[in-house]
Image (cartoon, rainbow, N blue to C red; front, side):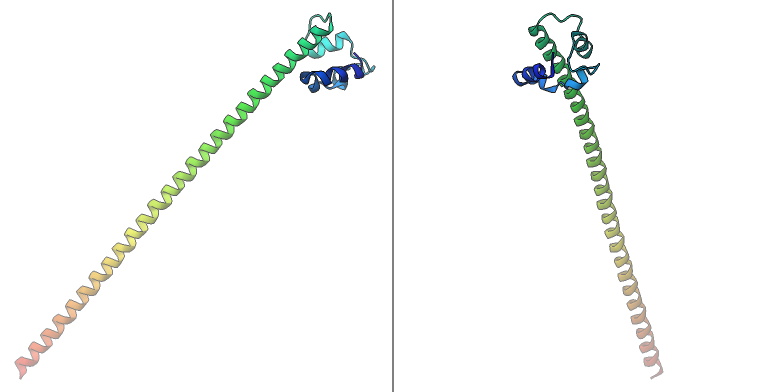
Length: 140
């Protein structure tokens, strides 16, 4: 099979378009022998052109299956990583919301404590004024 013959076959068959002449021509003599083709495509016997096309089609189909399996695994890995990132992000957002609620509760408790302190201080001042007024009235 010469380079030109392979090129002609490739034009008519999409599976053949994936073949690289230089890789098939192991000894570099410019012709792909039956042995080189058999070795490249794992054939036991090549007898005619139809068998060549069938075998090349089978090899191309196997390569497509392998590529599909690899792509499927990559997609699965990407999906898994994406889910993990989403779950991590979601967990972080939940933590942030929980901390914000705690901070609000803490701030509200501090405000309430300050208000109680102010109320107690006002009550103490009012008591002091009442005692002073009572003491002034007793003296008078």
